[in-house]
Every structure is written in structure tokens, then in C-alpha cells.
Length: 368
Ligand code: THG
Image 1 (cartoon, helix red, strand yellow):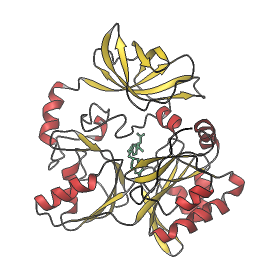
Image 2 (tube, helix red, strand yellow):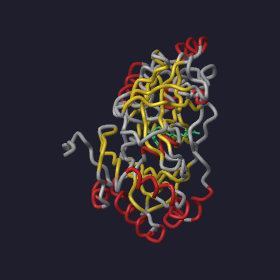
Image 3 (cartoon, protein in one colour):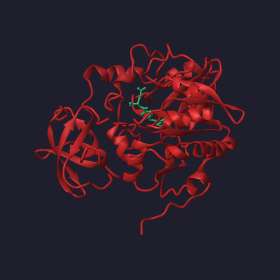
Image 4 (cartoon, protein in one colour):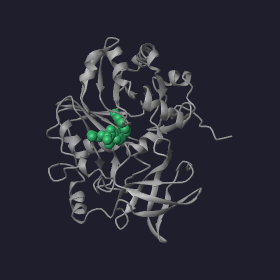
């Protein structure tokens, strides 16, 4: 029998947990000290359904750090090498966040709610403590709190139709990484076109836990004929989409450039970013290793709970950090950190998997 997870107050529930349980969740992970479903029917069946229908995801574990006050914009810019000076209210930015060494602390989506108010929608690390430390240490006029906001994602090809039935036709005009405030249950909720899949869809930032179950129920009621199901970020689709998982594919030991997130950095113009000097220094030499995608033939591989070594003729070339069998591509797909001598497209490498050594082919781009 596999081990169970003992759930307590520290493994925080979400406003949707009772609905997720009723929907038949079969596995959880912990993310930001909170329950995050990982499997409903099976990873493969969830994948097939995500790519063909529409799912509702409890991603409340994407916690918001709210930064508010006259110096909020200054504080947010201290966190990231992405230049936020042109960011407008109504926009969301994918923002690598780094410490003073240029090491990745998190890779959140930053939401600009007002000129003096932001939500930082965090991946799995206690970023709020770093932000509070900066605010207190630099005596900034900004409050840093974790508000009662729980994202609920609608993902899949049917997402526009489902969202339109609950929020109105206006959702269709929301552009990628933009949001609109739309009403539900008497509340004005931030509805953004974003989400941790490439199947399209929205994230509703449910402000006030009391709206969680009514919204969940409204979506399932409205989506009956769309075959709406409870889902969750899917390992296979996530790797095909090339989306990184903080703590798995990258850690504080990596710079954004090693993570392939250079396109989200404007280090020269991101004046105020605490990691700016460090990143300008490492940018001169360029990264020694970088995220790549690997394709491996043969049988379906088991999951990768700890890195697998990648070798090139007996030499250490890097490590695989995420892997899954892709039914649509008929190969094992993987995310790896690969040294620069071996990172060119088409390079053949050997991966030490628990199922034995496997040949792997390097790709520069993800599958989706
Ligand atoms: N949505 C929200 N918060 C989040 C996530 C999310 N917090 C945790 C985690 N996910 C943060 N990590 C990511 C990783 C990738 C993306 C978003 C958050 C993402 N990337 C797109 C891509 O790579 O194609 C597009 C980025 C862009 O073009 O700006 O969406 O999912 N609220």
C-alpha cells in the first residue's frame, strides 16, 4: 500500500477542499503548506480529458502575497529583474524573483490591481517572509499580507464556453495575461486569462472563501453538457508545455538565465531589483547550464521524485528533474538542466533512470 499523507492544520485546506473530496480526488501534494490535488482518475485519463474537454482546478495553493501602499511598486520591482515600469493595471506578468545572489526564490505571476496594489501569485516557497523582510529592512511604506484569495482555474478547450456561461460573454474578450473584474454572487472577482496549462483558460482569484463553493457549484451546474470535471495541474501536459516547477526543475541555486527565463528579465532597466548587480555579473559570462527538454524512447518511465543523472560518454552532463510518458507524442518527455557542452538540439545523451539507462535526445523547445 502506498504511504498516506496525514492531514492537519499545517496542511492547509482550501475553500474548495470539500468539493474536491466529493469529486473523488485520489492524490494530493503539498504546495505552500496547502493541499494541491495531483490526480483524480489517473494521470493519463486526467490528461486526455484536460486536452479534450474542460476542467475546474483547485489551485488555491497559488497563494497571493498582497503588497499595498505608496511604495508598493518600488517594493515589487526590488523582487524581480523583469522591468515593471510599463506594467498597467489589468495586466499579469510572469516574474522570476531572485535574491541578492541572483538565485531564484520563486517564479510567480504578478497581478497589478492598482497603482499602489499588487498580488504576487506564488509558486512553492515562503516568499512572503522575504518580501516582509525587505519592506521592514528598507522601511518601505508598504503592507505585505496574505489575503483571503484562492485561485480556481478553468482549463481546457471548453474553458471559454464554460466561463462565459457563469461570468457572461465578456470573458471571451479577456486577452492572455490580462484580467477583468467580473461579478459573481455579488462579488467583483479578478478573472484572468492564464493558468498552468497550454490548453487555454482562466484563473478566477476568488476573494473571500465564502464564494468558493457557490462558484464551484455554478461551474459544474453550467458545464454538465461540456463534460466538466474536477482536475488539477497535470504532470504530462505540464512537461509537454515546458512549464517549470519551482523546487523541482529549479531552486535558489539557479539563476533565471539557467532556467531559460531570460526573456522575462530586463536586468539593465530593472533598477532597484536586489539581484541586479549579481545578474549583470553572471550575464557577462552567460550560463554554464540551462533548462532543456529531453525525449526518451522505450517503455513508459516511472515518475522522477529525485533528479536522474544525465551522462555523455561517462561524463556528467546534467540532470533530469521532471519526466512522464506522453501518450500524444509516444515518447517519454522530460525537463532537464544540461551543461553547455551538451545542450545543443539533437545531442544524444544517456539518462540513468530507475528503469535502467536510456538514450535521450536534446530539444530546445517544449512539445506544445
Ligand atoms: N497561475 C497563477 N499563479 C501561479 C501559477 C499559475 N503560481 C505558481 C506557479 N503557477 C508559478 N509558475 C508559473 C509558470 C509558468 C506560467 C505561470 C506561472 C506561465 N507561463 C507561460 C509560458 O511559459 O508559456 C506564459 C508566460 C508569459 O508569456 O507571460 O503561464 O499558473 N496565478
